Length: 279
Image (cartoon, rainbow, N blue to C red):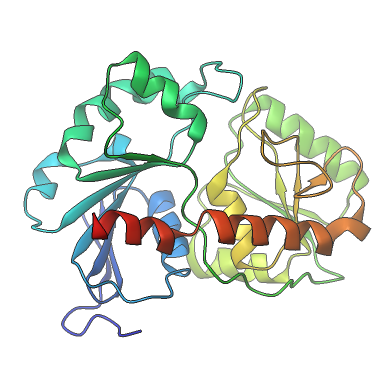
């Protein structure tokens, strides 16, 4: 697969993060966390892209003025959790509603990572024709299972939620090798800590059940099992992830293989790109 012949971008201009990992495909985001997600998504691309495309991750943070400068197929990835699997509103619904609705018109195709967010578009009378629902951000080929037997358990994410912090404190008493990295953890430093870890920890914000797909993508990319609170369907505890309340490390390899094989076969980014760029 050829790298971009004329330009190889991985730069920040003001609050805009550009990334061009392969020929014809550019990524754009407006926050470091979203830039990190773009880099992770790009690691799974295993086929050439023949049509010029621009992928913008984080529709709620779009810059419409900037988008007008690009004469490429514009693909927007909607990352925010708006509804859970029981149709309860999540925090992203009210916080991001205005920006999402305002920015949808600037995209040729939209990928909303959560299938449960469909209710958001229906209630706002948004046509679904150009929207694909599902976490199509995974590689077609999953890395080998790669835990570090004497490594640490690793949590990465915001510590602004009291419930999350309380659960982490409780877990630390049972698991002395737990390491916690805040939401401002990026790049090489984060990569090295993930490589050294035994497994990744997931504790959601609030009390609702949702699937944090960028965190799940990290676990798949680095060959790490996921230890988590209950995730919504289609994920099943101790089959796709290890139950956090009763950690059974004997299920680590099998759970990693189950979740990585399921996601790469059903929700690969390559599959999504082929559908969007051919139509």
